[in-house]
Length: 231
Image 1 (cartoon, rainbow, N blue to C red):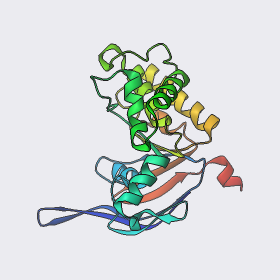
Image 2: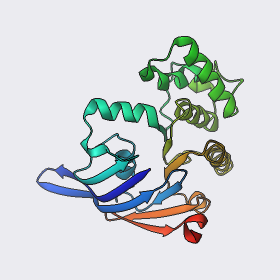
Image 3: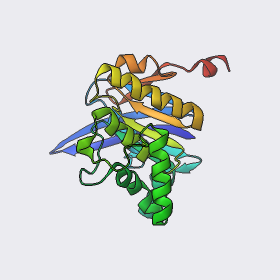
Image 4: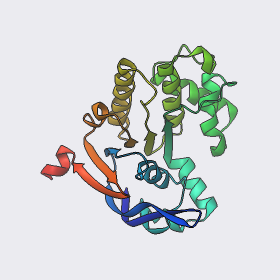
């Protein structure tokens, strides 16, 4: 799936150069569930954005299924992103004037799918996350947990290979956090997804099979999945 070598990302802040990532090397196989932890400002979200094709590295190699994402042009990267990656954010990123179903459908628009098929697939995705009876509700009519379920359905409706989750439980209370992570875990197992998650929550990180830490732009694997240890 991912083969990452000597990956760096630098930003300019006035005359200062910020090294957000400083030589990251990691393999992320198909079907992995990886949590990334680390202090604020040390590169977690930057790495997630690079893995999801939302930003480009300064240097290094970022191979996804054998293709170096750093060398793709914008059209190629957009196509790769729209076909392979689903995104879940801490703030849900729903459009408040659209219904739950319409929010999920937005993920299918770049794929040039017919309106009828978009509607059918969105309804099916919402049912899968337990919101089959909320398809016509607006964001303001949904609880925080329900809004995140809509966001998960939006990420899943494209049938992606990879789910990128940036603090997906950060705005939720403890009980709802556990429900949402349980849903993600269930979907990961049933769909054989690759899930890459940034989280500050140690309770969540402790439940993820594989754990990495980023500090000062460098990534270290802190815990390998049991199958990786024994293989």
